[in-house]
Image (cartoon, rainbow, N blue to C red; front, top):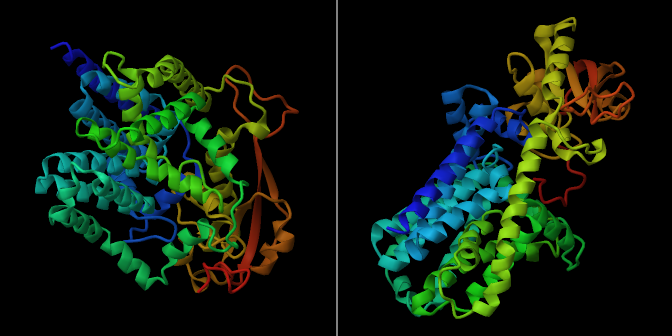
Length: 521
């Protein structure tokens, strides 16, 4: 009975934060990656060039319910992180008790990375739900060895693969736990675990078929991001960048607590009374470790290791949050338990300040440092301006909107009145999904209104693909301030350049810089 209030409080905490994220999700404009995935949802397919397809399918369902709005696009991420939170709570409650479940809810909702994943329409939120679901059901499957638990673990694993390719890293971690565990090693001798894996891989089969029919372009893209175009070498060029990004996304103190929790877990991984510690280590640390190692050769983006923090949040809550449990490693735990309230407090403060700043700017951040504002502001204004220019063209019915980057093309598609189909001229950037949707012959002879970040695009790029290009019109976007308008001589947060072009000659598709580029075929 003493534990019951903690469990109720944990459920209320994650439900409350999920409702907050749902309401908040409609309060700011979509960032470029979100409009890109929304564009995917208008071109449903079993696979896409850049990423696994579930984000497109989910956004399609979200917009069927809430319309083609910010809330509709983001609803799948809001729901997915709510599901991930619930699974972490269930895992903590089952193996550590209600008090640890409460502290798991507290730490998970504090972390900025978790909140961003539950707001922005990206694959990270979907993967979080899949990873947490797979972690829970695989733990129960090792514990009870029931077929339906292995199959549920396989289902979430398959859903994770459909969300983000890095879900594949869950499999070796779960297998290594069983391999090294004297208590559960015999589980791997039966067919049940492999039936679950086979089920998950079968769910992923449409993506494999799509890739086989499209020159394995997703594989090429992932290999390129992993540094396949570069000479293999070990260096620290990107390592510090990765660690700094992790400290910023989860907060420095939470990162320290997570690293310490992993260390404490691996000290006792295979004792029968503490097997869950070892399991959670293998269900989380390999994801983090893989990207740390990859950063020694290639740039790693801050969100890539995100799923690895799910399991360690339960470990940190068990080690440092719940002080009532006796522990043989008490000396090793003391400083972590002292750090816990400071870590939680600073994480909530940082998350609160950033989420507030996005909607109600209260901090005087210089424009050149205000990345969230650069990503969010101005797109609706740009869409209105571009559509007005298109309507003013001699042949508006034969005039398309374009960007030289897929991000701008996607923002134009969402925020231009009527949400028209738009074009990304990829010739000088990189291959992406627009290469599958448009061919030169679809647009030969058409006029266009386009947007770039440069005032000289008509001199060195657009003149190659259009018969005539007018000098651009500049559109300045200023940072929003809560209590005052930007001064007349204030510095814009960004400047965009709008071009009127006539007589498209062709040249949409990406041209590889050389044939050795792994993305070329």
